[in-house]
Length: 215
Length: 215
DNA sequence: TAAGATAGCGAGCGCTCGCTATCTAATACT
DNA sequence: AGTATTAGATAGCGAGCGCTCGCTATCTTA
Image 1 (tube, each protein chain N blue to C red):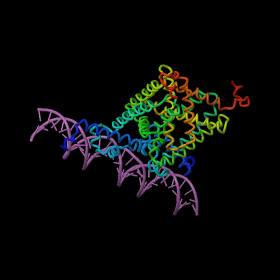
Image 2 (image 1 turned 60 degrees about the vertical axis):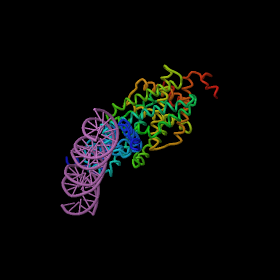
Image 3 (image 1 turned 180 degrees about the vertical axis):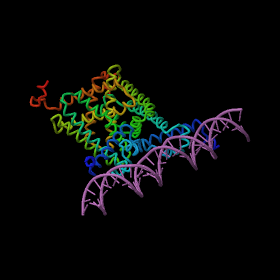
Image 4 (image 1 turned 120 degrees about the vertical axis):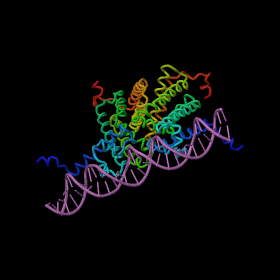
């Protein structure tokens, strides 16, 4: 009776193990950096053996690429979920959302992989698809969020992606040397800039959307 | 006669060796990334033995920190030299200058160290001074360049540093997945934005400066 | 010139790395 | 129940790591 309750299919076992490994890999990248994310560290964190890791992934690089894919998916979900709760004229909140996403451990793990991919051809080839998907998703989401398309959507995508780049690099350097007054001013500036851009690009908020009436 | 010509002081020998080592370290960081910048790789590139490296630097980390300092100094010189040749209303050229500096191998080496410093406490403590100096220099240079100070100078610094962050992160991701149309649009947008900001912040170009008359 | 200090070398150390081989455990199928 | 397949663990491998060591070469000082 109890033995049957704990019996899992092979597929379930596989899913559980690879899931643990991917979570552990992301955690190690975030906490230890790329260089120190060894197979031993991943397995210690995941609570599985190295043999099990190599059962499911051919090489260390393969598990890291799989982790990059998982991060990309998480990013897309997080971004979608967060955008859903936002009014489009909540400029400051949009800026803070983007900034906040750049400062997560998951994003730090992503950045570790991207930096490592610069000098590792195999990793780069495999990581590029994930990055491409992430960018495409951001572009699509911004269009949907603003209710625009065509040239205006392209412009908005440039702005939003550029703001993300800005906060990405800021997040990277802030760990080494923080400068709070400057960071605060940057939020303020980015907000003004986003307001100006989105006000020019978007169709007016109509009563049908309920935006104006809500206020 | 000839033997005397090739005789170097201990100080000269030291300077030559450490110089080679620092150049090699920067090159290895740029070409191989942080993880693969081993002591063996540095020494092979510098053409000196590991024993010589450890004569001058206590640890691998020490030589990397020294390289970070050297990069910081180079950055400051490059930026200063480039700013000297610029008119302040050459907005597009300023944008392209910043973008270009973010795409140098030296800057890539810098980024490798910054990313590694996130998860290496010792490295971080030592690298933070270099980053602080670099930021302070940028802030001072932008004020001088624009002929402004006080609040306006602070604002300009936020803008310029933010543009640098933006192109820094772009430079990082572009290696993995480039998107030329989007990059072109970003230059255009950054230029418009910079024009708007600097026009509002700067005192008028006076004949004494020769800016207006030159045109 | 001899003694002392500094620079630099190459071999070897102990350790960690990614990975493989072998064995055991769990599930699936007949 | 017995056999086949998949999943996972443990031990061990060879390569590479950062660093130390004993030594030689070169410069400086007395």
